[in-house]
Every structure is written in C-alpha cells, then in structure tokens.
Image (tube, rainbow, N blue to C red):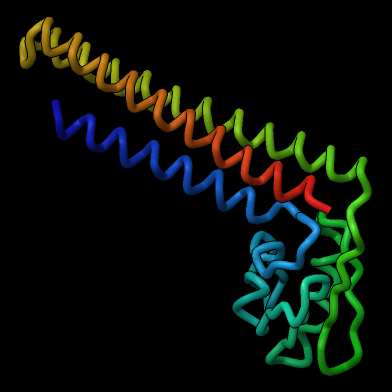
Length: 184
C-alpha cells in the first residue's frame, strides 16, 4: 500500500512540475528563453524545437535573440514565431533574429492571469484524478482481501492529505506567477 501511495505522490509531483513548465511559457514583462520552448519549426521534414536549430539568448530584459546554425532555418523560425499565439514579431537582420517584447497592457496582463488560472485548474483536476485512481486501487486491494478495511481508511486519509498538499502547491505556483505577470 505504501508503494502505491509513493507512486501517487510521484505522479502528483509531476503535475506540479508540468504546471510550472506551462507557467514558464506565459509571457510576463521580462524576456525569457522559455517563451519559445513550445514552438517547433518544420526543419527538413521533421518538427524540431527552436532550441535545437539555433542558440537562443536574452541579452536584456526586453529582447530575445535567436542565432540559427543553418541559414535555411531563418524563414521557418520567423514563421513559427509569428504563427504562435505569443503575439511576437521577429526581426531578421540576416545574421540574427531579434524579438523585442513590448510592455504588456493591463488587459493583456489580465488575460494572462486568466490563462494561468485555467492551467492551475487543469493541474488541480489532474491531481484529483490521481487521487481517484489511488482510491480505486485501494478499494480493489481491500476487495481482494490484500488489505484490511482499516488499512483502506488509513490509505484514503493519506491520499487525501497528499491531494490537499499538491492542490495547495498548484495554488502557490499560480500566486507567484500572477504576481510576476501583474508586476509592471
């Protein structure tokens, strides 16, 4: 039973890590290379992340630079950035692609916070689904007479405590990101 609970905790931890990765893609007022993590380009017939075909850097807080290793990838990189939902306009000078991040408007900040709340809610749902799976597994073990009814109750209480802990971690991550987004 403890092995099952440890596995559930590992799965819940992965949900929180994934949520933080999603938050990394949300644009704040500062430039960050994680903004481009989710963008893939068509590179010789295969979908490839930008970071695997170019070096990505942030020389200052408002600029991202992309230096492709292959001259033929300038066009696909620009196109991928423009078609992404980030609202960024890349500028190509033949050697390097620059992306200037304009300051966020109040309305855009509120939209980003809403998106952050949506990601958080999805994370909480995932944690609750893991709780349900764990409880179902414990009930099955009890039905097969592998554990007692008291063990089932203790296990369910432990799983509930884990669920509460990881739902709180999701909320904490949102609070940090919300503060970062609303900061001018």
